[in-house]
Amino acid sequence: MKTQLEERFGFLVHDVGRLAGKRFDDLAKSSVDLTRAQCRVLSYLAHYGDINQARLADLLEVAPISAGRLLDRMEEGGWIERAANPQDRREHQVRMTAKAERTLGKARKVGDEVALEALDGFTADETAQLIGLLQRVRGNLSRLVDR
Figure 1 (cartoon, helix red, strand yellow):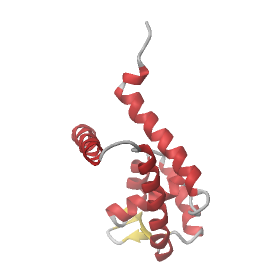
Figure 2 (tube, helix red, strand yellow):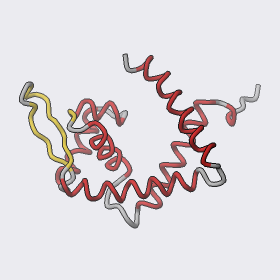
Figure 3 (cartoon, rainbow, N blue to C red):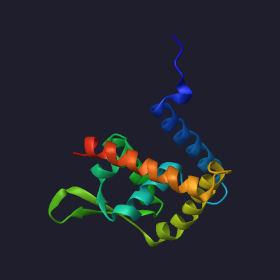
């Protein structure tokens, strides 16, 4: 029995993400001195504010030890700072540095370019509809997964 991967929701969502990520990497090489994973860390910090390492690992979908290594490199590069949580000294809060805030704008421009390329030929209404539909899908799944 032949499966229709092109019509499978999970496959399409994953493949679009994979392709967009590779295109981001290609474009970012010349303008952003960060990896895609590091850009994701900064984007999450910009969105959520200071958060703990365990939450970042969860958002990045990596093991806490892998997130720790990534954050070690970012801290050495001056992109993030870590501090003990005053309420729980075992927990480290992660925050962006001013250097990271300046670079995040460049990373967003790369992301905007990828989006423009991906949505080439879409009308403004189609783009808005697609974004709205994806937000609804995320909402549906978030209610089930993030309980």
